[in-house]
Length: 227
Image (cartoon, rainbow, N blue to C red; front, side, top):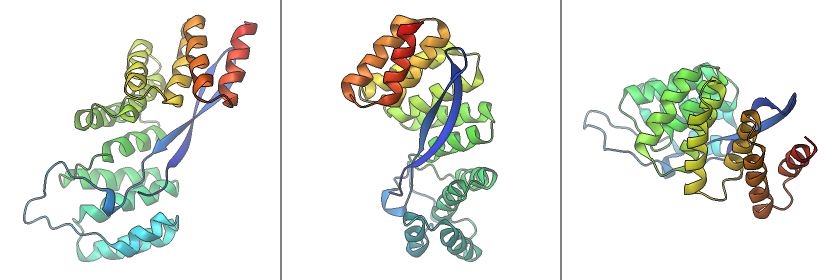
């Protein structure tokens, strides 16, 4: 699996205090891909190991170049389209990232994490409606994945009109993975915005139990105590 992809999402709370979310975009490689179904016989997809290896080593420019050359011989090879989109995303070109993910999906490529990554890419483009759709598709494929619920919760937060939906998805993520620190942290921020300070403090104390050195949780808890 390629390394975790961290991006910054900003959200205001507590009278202008700005906290940042490190959202994980899941890396991909042929060895980790699990397809929902096998492609039809006329859709022969193959990996390009040299290109995948370049991306694993974070040499995204080389990975892009090699995948694009590879696709010249087989433009409908979803096993090359997907990592090409991922590499463009790591380079900050989210329009191309979305384009190649969508191309792969059009070819009926439904790898277990493509919709999650697509959702993250749409957030970067501030297209929250499509981000929500992508996370819902991710949950249809893998309803027991905490990150899928977390991603949908954050998309609802970005939408700005779905606090209860956000809360429900954060809580689902936490039930699946009680140690999901980001879900607890941003649920606490949501509770602060909703004026639910005891609930926010409860989540922050849970984070500190899990990770005593978590500075973000300690600072926010201290701020709540002063309010």
